[in-house]
Image 1 (cartoon, rainbow, N blue to C red):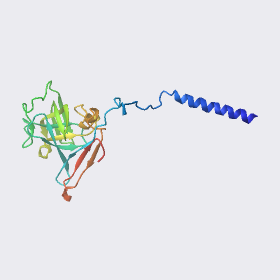
Image 2: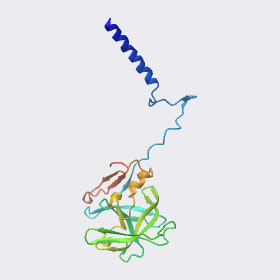
Image 3: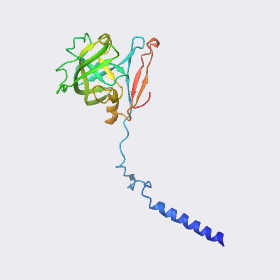
Image 4: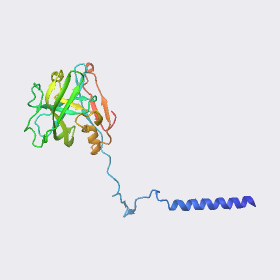
Length: 222
C-alpha cells in the first residue's frame, strides 16, 4: 500500500513538471511558418568576416611593412607594423628628417583635420623619438575604411628612425600604451563591426626562403 501511494505521488510530480515546462519563459520557440516561409525578420545579420593584408619583410627579417591609404592622398603609405607600441603616425611633408619618405601634405587630403592642434611625443628606446600633432582622416587598410580615425602627423623624427624603410609606424598595442589616447585600428574595426573580434594573427615568412607571403589576419588567428 505504501508503495502504491509513493508511485502516485511520483506520477503527479512528473505531470506537474511537464506542465511547468509549457509555461517556461526562457524556452526556445520556433519562428512561425506563413505560406511555407519562415519569418526570420528578427534574426540579426551575419557576423563580419576577418580579412588578411599582405606584409613585406624588410632586410633579414628585421621588420614587416604594410600599405595603408590615408584620405585622398595620391600615394599609399608604407608603414612599419609594430606590436610594441600603440600609436599610428606618418611623416609630415614638412618634416626636415623625412628624406624620401612619403609625407602628409597640408592640402593632400580634402577631409583631413588638424584643428585644434593636439601635440604628442613617442619615445622609441633610449635614443629615438617622434613628435608632432594629431590629425583625423579616413584610413584604408585592405578593403576596409575607418572614417574618421585619429593618427599622428610627425614634425620631428630623431635618432635612427629616418633611416628606416617605413613612411611611419602602425602601432598595434592596446590603448593602455597609447600616447595619443586612441584605440588601435584592430580595436576600432571590431568596435565598428568591421571584423568579428579584436584579434590579430601573424604569418611571418623569412626573407631567406624567398616566398614573400607574409600576412596579417585581422579578426581571427592566422
